[in-house]
Amino acid sequence: MGRVLAIDYGRKRCGVAVTDTLRIAANGLPTQRTCDLLGFIKQYCAMETVDLIVVGEPRTLSGGASESARYIEPFLRRLRTELPSVPVERYDERFTSAIAHRAMIDAGLKKSRREEKGLADRTAAVIILTDWLQAHTLC
Image 1 (tube, helix red, strand yellow):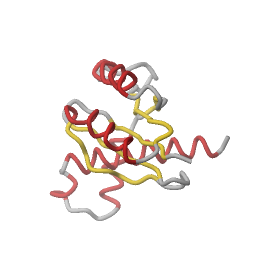
Image 2 (cartoon, helix red, strand yellow):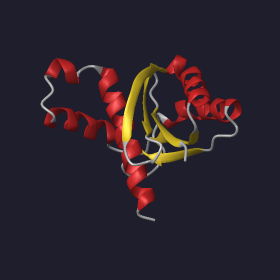
Image 3 (cartoon, helix red, strand yellow):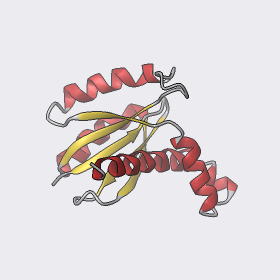
Image 4 (tube, helix red, strand yellow):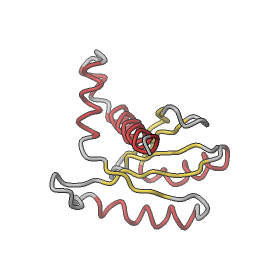
């Protein structure tokens, strides 16, 4: 069984997380600059078997597409073109950034560490992937 990779897409940085081969747990990978993300994913998929890429879908409180969704669409088109054999699934990412910050506070991280944007992005990607795993293991 291959891994599932998740992306918390941002305009400057992207959080990335991946499951273990048994799809039990999600672990963060190094945060990537948005301009480097596609190359990183292609390289990762060349080294590891990835069965699915889950991309966070930003939504408003009412469930509609958020303004930031328009930045993700061009990336998704390129991703599907460059890796046509790997399916891409969107997954609701509402509140993941807030949950990530709360998790860092609860973990006792100092404010200076919590303000590292890469850490919050990576944590948000882990949350997206963990939520996805939980939703798909209940089926």
